[in-house]
Length: 144
Image 1 (cartoon, rainbow, N blue to C red):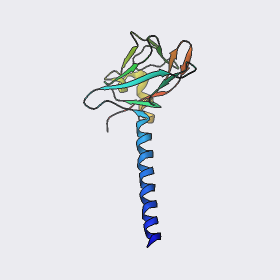
Image 2 (image 1 turned 180 degrees about the horizontal axis):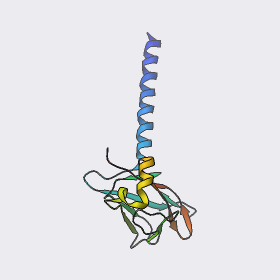
Image 3 (image 1 turned 90 degrees about the vertical axis):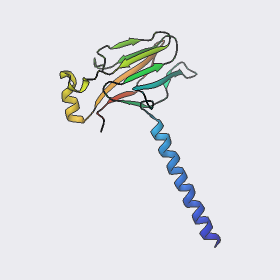
Image 4 (image 1 turned 60 degrees about the vertical axis):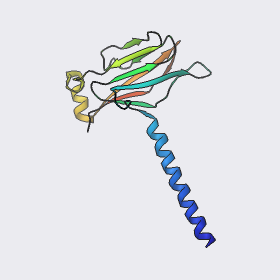
């Protein structure tokens, strides 16, 4: 009887760990706030002054906005001369940078082929603060 009780407790613990792991992984992807078309990304600095953000990647749909909030002065710099808003360097104003994804981005000639092949667009960018950078991706897809 004791062994049966221990097995049940072990199963409950395993299920709890799986649920917690899934929630932590889901939190690592930035997605829109309920009832809005905006993803809010917190930009902070670690003890060495290196930028950090609260998500490992951001997922957006056409027409949505990525709103970066952080230090008074920072910039979002898109890599490979490719930006969803056609602006490579986006400077903060009062600690905020807003990147609006065009409604028709998936149909634009410069992005249509990548979307057709992959089913999404990937934009590599850097968060730059005082010459120090963090390089997470931004993923643009279509609503299922």
